[in-house]
Amino acid sequence: MHKKNRLACTVATVAVMGAALGSGAAIGTETAGAASTPFRILLIAASSTSYLKTNVQTETLMAKAAVTVANKGGGVNGHKVVLTTANTNSSPTTAVTKLESALSGSTKPNLIIFGNASPESSAELPIAKQDKVLTFNQAPTATSGKAKTFPYNFDMSPSTTNYVQSFIAYTKAKGIKSIGIFAGNDAYGTAISTSMNKLAKAAGLKVTDSVNYKTTGLTFTSTLSAIQATKPQLLWADAYGAPGGYLMQDLKKIGWTVPVIGDDSFSVSTPITQPPPTGNLGTAALKNLKFQTVSAGVYKPPSQTPKNTQTMLNAMKRNGSPAASLLFGYEYDGVLMAVYAARAAGTLTTAAKIAAKVVAQQKAKSVPTGLFPSYGYTATSHFATVPVKSFAFVKPTKLITGQFGAPGSTAG
Image (cartoon, one colour):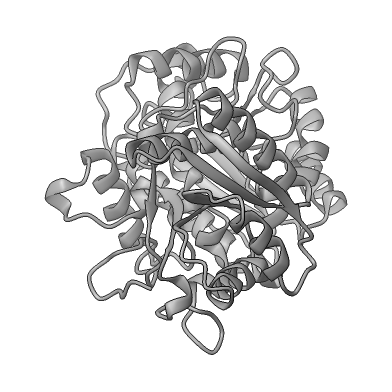
């Protein structure tokens, strides 16, 4: 279960048709038709839901950036890549209606990206499977990455286990031996705290205390004091929205200066990312906090940035400025993985052939994805498993063009 369950990600239609340059690639049998036939991508997300607008704006921007890159390289063997979007308004029923309409229309998509929450993708995936259409899914479910169950789907967001692996790496690199765990009692908090406890113990770390707090709570001083009494060297925390602010304020109230590393929910929480009076950015309350984000979402000079990531950032900036963290940039990689696989498969429409190439190209590392260098897909597992180096822990700063720590930002 992924954080998009918690963050639940105008019907807008955006046609992005960059000039297709000759790729020099051999055109496969199924793509040898009229060059005017495009490779159609549909991004389904909740673009009009108030607290998700910035996230979906970033998802759409990153998909458009990938389309720009793909078309600059010749599209799919000479066929332009075209992107359209559909708004679900956070409703599984609406998501299904929009999906069925697209699949039965005259411009059926060759790739569908589910940029929404798990309840929506759960409703959409069986329909897409029945229609044998390739999908990339941002909000994993318990079965969405099982190739046997959904052979044409690939999850883009890593699992809680994958995210926690970076907590382990960070903690051990600091020489820390004992931790406390503070996570929400909602679905995602319960899932990640389970992974935290399991992986910490397996790594030889002592868990002095582990608490699943009530996400509706307004103060956590007594709970934090109890954890403090167990004397952990580091506090692992999960919190989205208001609880993140309460946590850091309450630590200051009780005078506990323990270092805190937060999960990526902190990176998209207003109490952490915004200055007063809306949030706590730049205040003493956040002095001891670092939170998890994707490495591509942490600023580095272009000369120190991996080539594929710099290409992604350049294409992104040509299309606009992200309103949210690059944590919502999976769509860039999803588009490129699908386009490169379709090129290799020599087809616009046969999902099984394209899916097989998506898997094969993971081993070859031939796709210039910019957010994560690889996703670890196999013939049996289409769950995303990315390298630990793909994550980073950073101090809270102002977000500039989707990145933390950029010139002009100020650390908390």
